[in-house]
Each structure stands twice: as structure tokens, then as C-alpha cells.
Image (cartoon, rainbow, N blue to C red):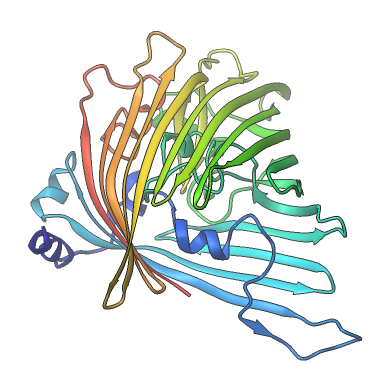
Length: 420
């Protein structure tokens, strides 16, 4: 195994090819990001500034990350001929600032050919402990901060149900055992710098497409749907079972509107989920089940059974109604060998069942490990997908109609990131 990893990391690489898969899949900084970019606006306690008026002090932390990917794709003949590739993944810049009771948290990301805001919000904590965040924040839905352990996330991420960010107001209500979060998002986080009309963003949302983008997806004419006026609520209760044994049980709900800029009509969308997140010593177990539906007001000739979602500068089609189930587990082993501090072993499985009987369901399974060595975080993943946009050849239609002849495809991936 060690020899294979060394061979893989040593493969010669050029820039990533010009295709949707090329700019490398999903963000899951997991442990490191949970510390620096978690749902709290409290800055890292690393630096400070001299006192100003009275007792006010400015606290701030400036940081970021640099990540690279080594990967081997079963469906890509050129990639296989080269025995895989090594490519730039992400450059991140982030800042957390606190002054006079007002907090600021933001992160911006740069990829190969496009860049975008990850999150950016102002925060204020009231005397009773209730926190309010205004700006682009992670929506309260499902298992937080992530419903997965691996670098690829779960299928939930690719439908905007995991680590999704939108623009609005979020309120977090404190309680020793009960986690209450509510949010109103006026719209999504927006699209930034890239080649697509509306998909240069970090998290997946319903997006507009140009006529050329639609044609590539097999859609007649441009699409104009956008998420607006969205309400989110999440409640979770944590049970203690002795030292280092806890079980969180929760439920989440979401409802919002879909404005179509072409028809100037408004549809709606909804999602609901229940989850369990248990930590039992060194083991972590996750279960989540959710249903969702999009009811757009499309122009004549465009199917209401499909919605277009986008991120990473590339849109794709998604079944308008469906259900997702996921089951994940992880075992964390503390180590003391050189710089290596922890090893986490995990398997994450998720299944998308589409309501349209003519559509083929989608699946994802990731078997892997994460290595923690100081500020260096390395994910080694064996990812398998069936009708999956990022693990297989059918990017545009995998989460919608799918391919009846599709089998399991695989991607061996190593993501190496230094977080500072």
C-alpha cells in the first residue's frame, strides 16, 4: 500500500483538463475548517491588538489553506494512461475579527479558473447568549457541521442539503442540551468569478443557465429559476451516556420560493430531515433521512420534473423530487509517531431515490482515512459512485434521469491540505 501511494503521488501532472470534473470535487476541510470556519463567529484566540477606548480590544485571526489533489479515475482513459494526476485544488484565505461585541467571519476561495466567497457574515451575541449572524452563513439543516467524514461529502452535498451557504439572517439559541437554530435567507450566496452564467459558487443551489449551458444539458432554452425567501429551522437534543458517549437526535425543515426570471412566476421548494449523530468513545455514527421537492414555474416545453443546480462553475440537472438516506461511521485512533497525531478510518454511504420512476437512482460510497499531523490534513479516499456527477462520466444528467446502463465507477483520491 505504501509503495502504491508513493507511486501515485509521484505521477507527472499538468493542469487539470477542461471538463466539469477537472477542477476537483468538493470541499471538506472537516477537522481544520470546523475549528476555523465553524458555525461560531468567535475568532480564534491567536492574535490581538492594543487596547483602544475603555476595555475594548480587537481580536483577530488571519489564515487560510493550500490543497492539492492526486487522483485516479476509472472512467477516464487519459487519466488511467498517465497512472493518475496531481493537480492544484484550492487556495483559501480567511479572517475572523471581533471588536466591540461585533464579530466578522469570512473566507474566500480560489480554484483553477474560478473563485468565490465561501462564507462571510457579521455576528452579535446578546447577553442571554443568543447569537445572530447576518450575511452568507451555513444554513441550519441536518447533521452539523458536516453529515460526512470524507473529502467528497455525501450525496446530500450535491443537492444543497449539506454544508450549504445562503444570504440572510440566522439565529442560534443557547441551551445546555438543546440546539435551536432558525434562519431566513433572502436569496442564495450569489455567483462570483467564472465562465458559467450563475454557477461560480461553493455550495449547490438552483441556478439560471444560458442557452448554451442548457443545450449541453439537453434542455430547450435558457433556465431562470433562483432560490428566494427561504426559511430554515433545526432542533436537536443531545443525550449523555457517560463520559465521551453522546447521542444527538434532531429534525430540520426548509421552505422557500423559486423565482423564474423568464416566466416572472414564483414556485416553491421544501425539504425535511431527521438525523442521529452519535459519538461513542472513538466511534462516530451518523444516520440521516430526508425528503425534498422543487416545484418550479418553468416556460412551456421545459420539464418540471428536473431542476438545474450548480456550483464550481458547472451546472447540472437534478430530479425535482426525491429522498436521501445516509449511514456513516468513523473510528478515530490517536497516535504518537513523528508528526502524525490522529488517524480516522471511515465508510460513508448515501442513496438518492428519485420519485420519477423513469429516473435511475444514484448512490455513493466512500471508504477511506484521514491523517492529522499538526496543520497538515490528508484524506485518502476510495470513492465509488453509480449515476454520480463527480464519480462517473455522466456529469450533466447523473442526478436526474441517470443512465440505465450505468455501473459503479471509482475514483482513488488523495487530498493534501495545509491549514494555517
